[in-house]
Length: 303
Picture: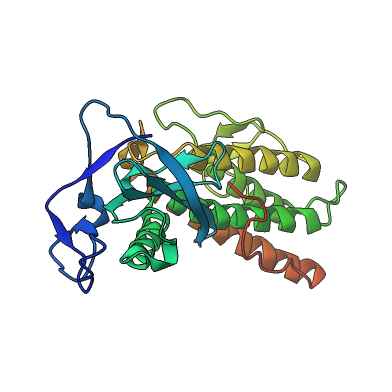
């Protein structure tokens, strides 16, 4: 277990009991404990004897954390430590460590001066952390992006396929939605290909109903479109799952085009495009069968 020491120790405001010396460091606000500057790593190692004396779960934005309380009898100190237990494996978050001195380590936690304030401070920090980390952004992004893809899938599922008299307008719209979803999820520096092949067509040779210049090599079946949608859903999930603090600052730049977006922006752009065509597909279904799939609020599966 990492050891911590205090920097610029001062008494907790309002805690004046001379029999129980509680020390912390404070930030600019004298009424609030500054967890981030409270502890610093101790160079080297020292002997210690920590014993767990309590634990409390904390839920923040659908993420699970455990606050564990330890006591060090030798040094007469209490240590509060945080782990994100909703992950596998659990992740230790040393930035939330709080260590403070007490007169007697055998005093019940609820009677220790300052303990309630420390616990409350850690919970506040956990909620801020859970609401601003990249992982949390990724969870929200997948929840809505996955829902947009599901709306396209639901529309294709309801499409009354007629091989003798195909509805090319619906097909071209659905194919374009999936193809561009694939394109915007791909590395723009490499040649783009699709499992449902296409050919670039000259403006004067584009059939009626085709969107853009990427002409499908044939009319693909509903089964093929749904299979493609499933592949892209998994691809999108993987792209979002592998985002890191570092990659979030990377850019998506077309090699032969003029699109230049930050990674997060191209994902949002892509999601908007998918939802745009989901709405068009629903409109075409209402015109044809007087029915369309209902709204999907969130992707049902977690990232």
